[in-house]
Image 1 (cartoon, rainbow, N blue to C red):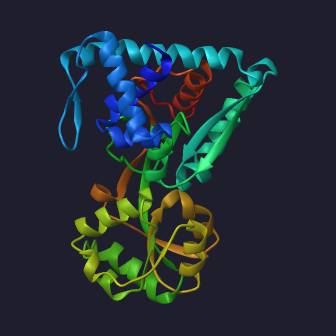
Image 2 (cartoon, rainbow, N blue to C red):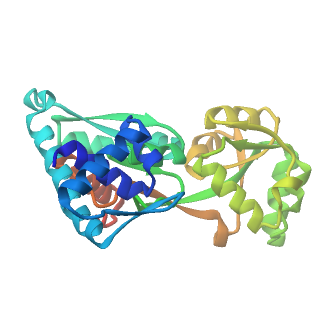
Length: 309
């Protein structure tokens, strides 16, 4: 038995698929199959029940999985302990984050983190919420911040911040009157949105996922919404809305400054549906290093939430 066999075994166990495990480890599928066959032969047991699409751990495989995961965690701890960056006093912690947490929440978190742990450094990979999950699963990042919960059996999602989604428009008489009308009459009818050009975030974005949920809960089907653009940069969306190219849904965090300067207008959504949670993401069953634990502690300190590992 060697560590490569153990690494392959864990990857197949977690993906329940040989080809997905091969992609994660940058190996060919025959090589993955050979490692598993060799390990089963050495152990003298069958570790997986196989069918045409998936593989599942046998009872013996499930027993081995706990020990195998511990072996990989010990290997990672040894790498951390003796890495050159640690000898020099600096360890770059890879973080994946979607755009809203990266722009509006991480700055405060990192200010506190750097003050408490001045010898530690981070490397931020900004992506969308689906990309955050991909980074965590592939090992590209150990800690992630996502704008929505994307179910994945390998990932643990911990809510740490309650965000508010709002409808943003240009600050024109038309929309000022619309906002006042809805406020005074306590209207909950948002059907007029279908008559306006609508700008969406890109596929995979937490804001995009939440926007589609909100529109549905307001009685609007996507096929009836006049979508004129799908854009990955929230700053570009704000500029387009400001220039009367359309309306959009965005985190209130992202438009506070523009609204205060009267560059944009926002219309609150019904409280029952306008709230969303932002999430910390990390891999299940994986022992976190000290620096990763320190980051979670900092998030809990800044936002006064108990981050449960």
